Length: 230
Length: 272
View (tube, chains in turn red, blue):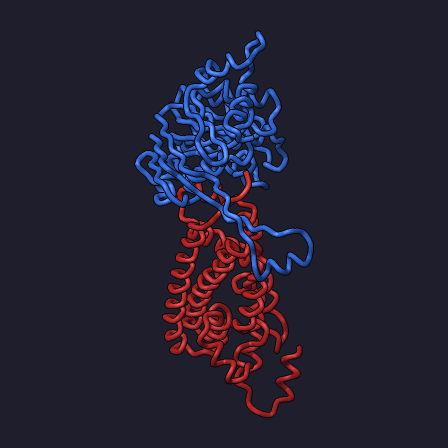
């Protein structure tokens, strides 16, 4: 693995141990659908661009909540299917590639909480992609932008602890890292329990803010929506 | 029951000529033309009526349906349906209406029809007993028994349309909007749909607004028609009175068909 070579050559003490890094990468793989921004529902894009959203609007439900639930369900169902085989393989691989278990129960609990909150944040961000489609009428642009930038900032390309300091300070104020990087580092113990407890309220604040922005934008979009044809 | 007064709606339509050059140009500066889809439309409808809503292509029929079903927000005007303003109280209001857009599908494409129905039951929170009795009535009268377990993608247009109509009635709405429900249907399906519409109107007292280009639909179903053209309301009244009014305009001995009368009306109002 590239990271291993990198670690064996380095002379300074790295900010994250190889063991923690391996755990980080495995978890990324297992919960891919929890953390991938480009994981999308084409049906929703079609609803918007083809005007079939007309029917959605005839249903006695708030569209934001309806779609949120739909996206959440999709991610959870695909994560459940994906994580079991990967985790089983990862736990039984020889060292140093084995996935280590969390050090204690408290860490495990914090990980689960952080992961679930991260998932909710991610869905709120992806809702913004769908809402932007009301204006642009094409999913490609916003998906690409959100996808590439969001993934990089969430530490999917390079794990955040390996980024240069100036970049880390930018990444730390944005919500993206709270979706993937944060829960995985809690699991591997790279972020100690006390620090995790401080960051979970920040997750909640971001979640709340993103939900508000999303709801507001959706309300705006629906008021000016024009359903063509028919 | 339904009161619409002074509804207006205009759309901005982007215009450009063909070719790459004008496509690039339109990135920076776009020319819009305002198209008045509806101007000052008013009418009111009593409970239990069937109203035929007619007009030539592009007259604003579908736009009206979208406004009164709460999908579009009009530029001006007010609308009260069962005490609700559709686009303001959308969630509470749409529980009471059923909508069928003939050109779109509300059924989930890949799953059997009955699964779509079950999902709609949950979305509308229909009590189980009511749902079962509605489902039974709908499968019997629309003859859905054989097709209800088939995935939607494998249904023919006529079969699908019958399912669409059933889907919009599962929650026992008191108003039903049908936007071209008989589009593309063969004679047998058309008659089945018409009989069904008459039946739910008589038995359950459902108020129905129907748009169509098939004048036979109108003649078979509606006692009252509303004619619009170029966004304005032109005629609102009894269909037989209309026939009497125009019958003298035809020199031949035979009684003119409703189709001919409508063509004559379009000519008179210069909306073709």
